[in-house]
Length: 248
Image (tube, rainbow, N blue to C red; front, side, top):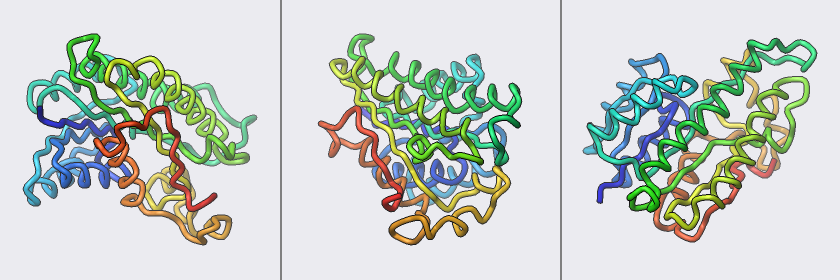
């Protein structure tokens, strides 16, 4: 059976690094993106240039009809998903809780939490032995913020990632006997574009001194952990929350 991985938010940062590494390890990869088709196509072309198999798939993970269409497209073009990386996520500009609007909170939870649960739901419907599947692996992207709380910056983001931790534990227990492993990776300070979208492009440099390893991490370092959790080498690992945070 072909190994087919869907990586949400796969056009940049950790998602793009994971797509490239998974393809190098023999996965057929669906690179999901919300709006930046050019970036997704660049990832796909790089994978194909290296002899891998990849497609780009547009969908806003917070929109159920788009999620359904995305999985249908992957079914048709690559086959049934056997690996899902719930990487799509957003932050917002640094703010205290008393400054946060309902619109901000809904966006934060719609994309980071509901989107991940929707994608996991569709993956389980394809992977579970209960539904005629052959098993699979789901890796959720949490954050060290779930432990640290992100006070004065992104308490809402930290809360959303705390929800991902709880979801990971519960889903892992729910589907463990159906051939599906569910784990989460919690990156710390990682050099990606997400900090700029939060209004602090040099955030890693500002906070590197707080990391015991005295540096930020790379998207490739996080991708290594994700791809291990997807792989048969992690066959007895489920319900784990793996910190990739340099000790922070």
